[in-house]
Amino acid sequence: MIREPQPGTPIEELDTPALLVDLEALEYNLESMARFFADKHARLRPHAKTHKCPQIALRQLAAGAVGITCAKLGEAEVLAEAGVRDILIANQIVGAPKLERLTALARTCDVMVAVDDEANVTDLGRVCRERGVSIRVLVEVDIGMHRCGVEPGEATLALARRVAREPGLEFAGLQAYEGHLVMLPDAQERAARLREALATLGETCALLARAGLPAAIVSGGGTGTYDVSATTPPITEVQAGSYVFMDAWYLTVRPEFRPALTLLATVISRPTPDRVVTDSGMKSLTHEFGPPQPLGVVGLGLPRLSEEHATLEVTDPAAVRLHPGDRLRFLPSHCCTTVNLHDRYYVVRNGTLVDIWPIAARGRAQ
Ligand SMILES: Cc1ncc(COP(=O)(O)O)c(C=O)c1O
Image 1 (cartoon, protein in one colour):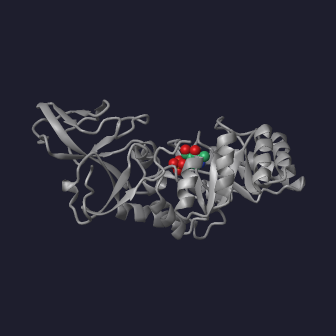
Image 2: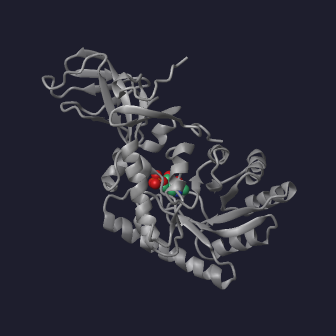
Image 3: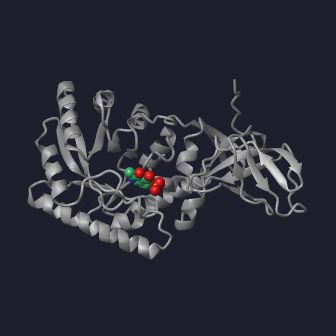
């Protein structure tokens, strides 16, 4: 049994690996984003796949978010249970077991889903009618990411008509996520390419409006593009997620937010002067966006991760005085997937534990 540390515990006394949330930085990010959206026509519907945590979702809503976005039905169930009332599952819900759960969820909260397939619309409508619920549906449009989504133009109109004809479903608008653009390092190119993609989406919205099917909601955007998305028609809702925590990757693109998520590790070995090993491998830190960054120590290279070890080359042995038992903090290279490896956040302020928040939707991939 892990005995949870009490509020007031200094960071240095926490057991590791421990995923830390710096409350001051988190609050700064929440407030900055809320301030940005305060005078915009578009609303923020933050993506909870980043934090998977009801405590943070409720803070986002309190800061003015119109609702919450999820990637998975399992995440939506956890957030609904915690009191979130307006949820977009920005994904296709396919297959009988999930459709059944979706209709159960629709009895407890207002839920929207994305569709890009006629047969899925038929199945969704049938299960909704059988269970006596109505669900709002966004048609997903591919604006260049080439993941899910129908083509803009006539294909989108045809599917929107199909949704509108299906009793049990309500056509609520479109979803179009520009995942291929959010990390483009050149801000001008990022903005220009997004505006181009949104111009095409705008034409599709006009086509729908002429056909008597106006898209009340047009949802898209991420942390890399939130400002352009929020100020460019036809977007009405922005799904940014990573801004709450940030990570080594996103900080290069969006320096206006602060890093709020770090991993506290312990040095478990200094087998040679030029090598330091910590207890934080790829089961504590993900590395699909590159290695995590060690913080606050000069003279250390980037870590090589094995399952439960991070091995760091010491480039300046005279400067690096780390020994077994010493602590080292890492900035994750990708916050969203790192979070999914942990059960709880150790919430800290000024070097002291103030709370522990369960990552309640962690692992809810179904
Ligand atoms: C559908 C969808 N919307 C929005 C986002 C934006 O998230 P972030 O702010 O982390 O870039 C993502 C990221 O994966 C996504 O898949």
